[in-house]
Image 1 (cartoon, rainbow, N blue to C red):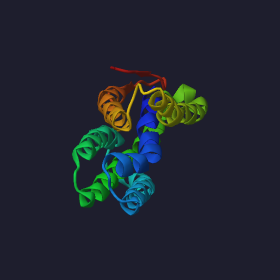
Image 2: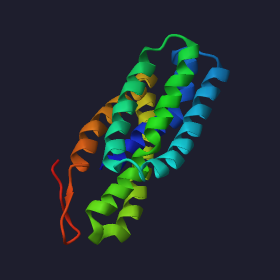
Image 3: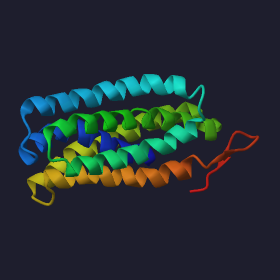
Image 4: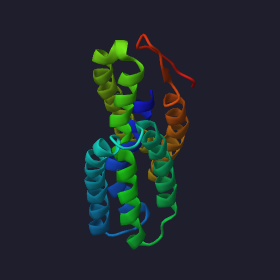
Length: 185
């Protein structure tokens, strides 16, 4: 469920940013393209960097920090009025998103060793469902005029805020000697 919610936030960023920045914020297409590019660059770079950071820092701390940064960045984005402020916001969103998905899989495998073979596949499936909801369903709701593009970006912020609770709950799980866990959510 946590990965599904994450997929919503990531896909909204990847699919609705250009429309949000050009039609709602009235920023130039060049700025929108740069924002989306920096988001993907930071997402990729952050995934590589987090692989090394987890060798020095307990993954649960990075996992807890990720949605806090995502939430702050999404709500900051909603208030931005200057084009020059958009690129750093997208850099932060990409960096914050970068390690949440891989650490979700890693922590799940750590806490629920007896299901490790299925967890990676289930994690990717949950991500894809979240991506579909964040891109297709939000578009459908916009077509029905039940949601605006701004509401869609706001939904990404609320999804990230929900992930704060999820991350703290999931990362509180304690591994037992048998390879199963007790999760304090």
